[in-house]
Length: 208
Image (cartoon, rainbow, N blue to C red):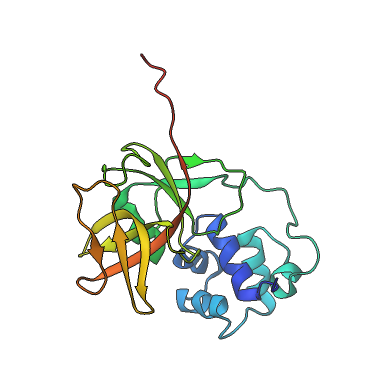
């Protein structure tokens, strides 16, 4: 397994704290472009910038630079769990365009990427496997394999949960389990896979 780069460590810590590049930049008095360059490793933080970055991210400067030694220098109150998003928040969460207001988080025993999130299933396209109201845990950094369920964007702002089926190296289909919903084909319309379903949950209604 390859060791994380400094840029990847910076990005993972920032995402774990639910901070945008702009928010981190403001806290350490640099431009958001600088944060982007550090995460892409076009440049790396040095001197005072490194110390301020480590303070904002709540970790040891040496760990940020080379990955060695303890991660934390102080005991911090960390956000725990995956953020539960509304569909309207997904694009902002993935693009980091704004600070997303997280009302609720879901605990998980599994280790998913820092960009992972949860949302509530809104339609019946995947019945009977997944039902409206189920909680979906999506990992945007996990490439889909044939047969996986994926979250996709089609059109300008429509989302779909479907079964992923590769048709060629350059095309794929998104298949519903409910025949009342349409098959989506990347060769016929603009489709973008946003993430792979890694877990879903169904809670029993105990209110009755």
